Length: 316
Ligand SMILES: Nc1ncnc2c1ncn2[C@@H]1O[C@H](COP(=O)(O)OP(=O)(O)OP(=O)(O)O)[C@@H](O)[C@H]1O
Ligand SMILES: [Mg+2]
Image 1 (cartoon, helix red, strand yellow):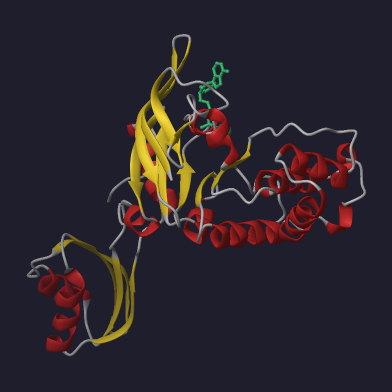
Image 2: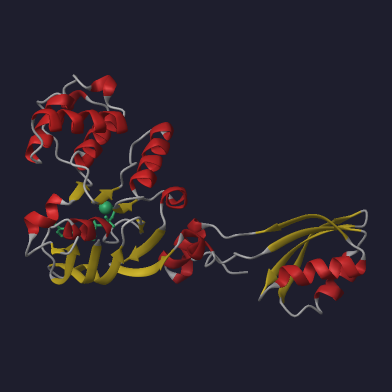
C-alpha cells in the first residue's frame, strides 16, 4: 500500500533523507525509529505529499503522491509533528470542519465524528474550545482528525507524544487494532511502543536506513542477546569453568557468585549454547537452580546502531 523508492531530501547543503527505500503492506504497522534529527518527520512529510522530494518516488495505494496527489491524499490520514489546529473552534466544531473537508456531510459526518470521539476518548472535551485544551487532549483531537475518513493508510508522527501512561496504552492498542486492515507508519522514541504495536521497525540514522526487521529480529542484534545466566547447585566454579571450557559454542564464561557449592555464571555464546549447557549439567549431576537467556533489548540495539563508535554499548 506504501512504496518508497530512493527517497531523498536536501535542505541546501543538508542531506536530511538519503536514498531510502521500503514498502508497507496492508496489515503492517511499521515503526520509525531514530535519533533526533534523523529524518523521520521529513520522510513522513514526503510520504504524505506535503513536502516535495529532491529525488525518488512514493506511491500510496498505487498513486504517485506528487503526480496524483489528490487521489493519494484521500487515502492517507496524517498526524503531523506539530499539528496545526484552528484554535477558535470547539472540538466538535473542528471535527465537523475536518469531516466536511473530507466530503463527509450530514449523517455520514455525524457517524464519522461519533466514531473518532469514541476511539480518541474526546467525550469530556467535545464542547471545549480547542485553544484551552491540555496538551494530551489537543494531541488526541489531532489524531481524531487524522482518522476521521477511516483512511487505508495512516502516517502518524509521534502519536503518543505528551499522552499520560493510560492514554499511551490506549493509543498503542488503537494503532495495533487499526493496523489489521490498514498500512500504518508511526514514529516514536519509546522503544517499548515498537514492541507493543509494530509488526516491523526501521531505524533511521542521519537520513539512512540502518536497520529493518521485526522487533524480535532487531532485538537479536543487541550486543548481549543470547547471553545465558545460569545458577548451578552441587558444583564448584573451578570444575564448572574447566568443563565449560570444553563446550563448542561457548565464547566466554564469567563467575557472578559462588557460595555453599552454588555457582552463578554468565555465559556468552557463539552458537547454540543452551542445549550444550543443559546436557553438561545433567552429565555432571549439577542441579540447574535458575536459568535466564537474555533475549536482547531494543534500546541496546538502538544505541549500538545510532551512537558514534566511542559511545557504543560495549560488547563484552
Ligand atoms: N525545512 C527545513 N529546512 C532546513 N532543514 C530542515 C528542515 N526540516 C528539517 N530539516 C533538517 O533535516 C533533518 C531531519 O529533520 P527531521 O525533522 O526529519 O528529524 P526527525 O527524525 O523527525 O527528528 P525528531 O526525532 O527530533 O523529530 C534535521 O537536521 C533538520 O534540522
Ligand atoms: Mg520528527
